[in-house]
Length: 465
Image (cartoon, rainbow, N blue to C red; front, side):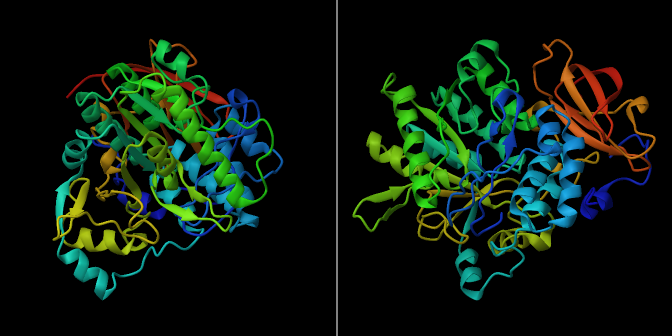
């Protein structure tokens, strides 16, 4: 059964209680099932990068889906990993395994699951032509440059890979910059109709969306609402099954997303400045001609045309490191070897334009963000340290498993039971124990065993350092 990736194991400290403890390209018809607050419906589909949008694929609900709907993410992952043993290339299973691993703080494992789908050019060395193009580029701080360009726009559209939590950490940092520029609306693809209650309540719950169950997404949304952003729900709401034709399904979804944004946001506030956070290809501005003479476009393209505005579109999915350096993209590998990736950067070309690479992205987005590969800190991916004011907090010994694995969740002590976890990770008996990463405050910790049963609780207080 797949467990913690080798790359993560190697990065952990030798002493268990030491003071410092430690996309696939190509079309696949993928759907993630979410139950409970999503009323046993199909979760928002995982977008496939540029080749074609996936469409929901009908299948029966299994034990893994049921356990995930109950917040028993480790138990759900074990069920999905067990199924993966007999169907190792099943795109639905791999996608769900990647999502659950991301919910559990396992970045490398999430990426490895998606990489198992193959394609995308990951692991390839830069071609001579690409190396020459990149050699003439200059790295520029991504946050500074995006904020500079956003100052003269009214719409910023940033995408994410749904299994990569670091994308939400960058989204939070960008939201802070955009708020200072007068942006007051946050439209997230994952939001449900709970968005109105979210603003009043101040924190997301399971009803808020599917991907917001991942702790860094939940905290991004919570912090944005605290800043003063108004959440906007714009995802398609289907009352029947989508068209079986892939192109028709894409067209229906993109048209609905655009129409919802126009109606729910720009029609009532014509001067609105909005930050739109979506998955993969929805951020692209390309139009393609159809045989019937009409045009097809993704959400960003449709919205720009509908409003007569030019949105600032940013891809951060292509140039994110893989589960290991060897599984990263060619352009990312070149930039890393040049020492350019100490922080998130954009690459300015010699002609003053911006490098956008990867199969299918050039000419379809304005900017492309390169994320750094940072060494692990306290047993967690390096980008997590300090994100959103988080500091390391030791897990009490009584929550560590005596055998197998356990899931530990941290929730704010003063939050209602429906509030989502601030951090979540997996411990394994006999392995070094990583640290929780939490903003200062008081927390309730709960440990679940591999069956999803709550087996231990503790309370901690985290102070700033």
